[in-house]
Length: 252
Image (spheres, rainbow, N blue to C red):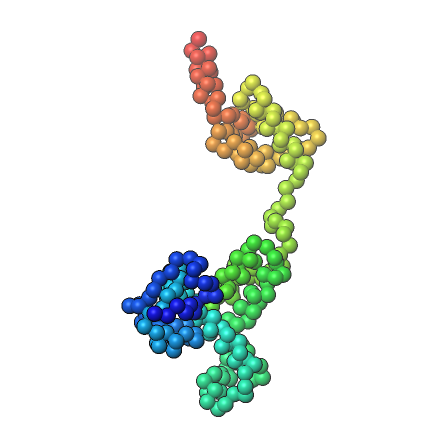
């Protein structure tokens, strides 16, 4: 039985250990897939003593897959500065005159140009949306259509200014006075002229007044309009009481 421990640099006395005998084939296969230097050593052994946790990590499929990806990245990076390409290597990395530049071999299709512009945009925007897009680009190859609204919007300079008609602050202050007047009043029925005259410094037109009232109170307000007469505004929560009072007064 071999006491040689090959996976980590820790002593066998550190942590729980196990003697592997029937599972040697699994260790050999894991070493072969990892392409490490332990394959020949394991083939010569009938058993090995290793840490329990290290054995699990060494034979785990996802760990082996991660090692394989790491090897692929290393091979790709070294191939860029590797020895001169042979004729067989040139055939292996086929060149396409239609899609690649004659001089630098970079892709010339629209998809490449879109990706290049998207890759550079997050560094200039530096906001949450840019970071999210950059994270998605790391794992996606198929990009959105060039004419898509989101694509066009993303490439526009990011100013941080909200788009839309700016609200008039004087109108906001005037409407605040009107809302206070309505909500502090003992009455729940008003005329349009009455509300317009609440604020003497700023004039709010009828259309703006109606829109703001609807935005503030929603279905809790009723606006009654008749040509040639005053426009009445009534709060719904008191509308029923007003009708009852008018009915009883007429009856008596």
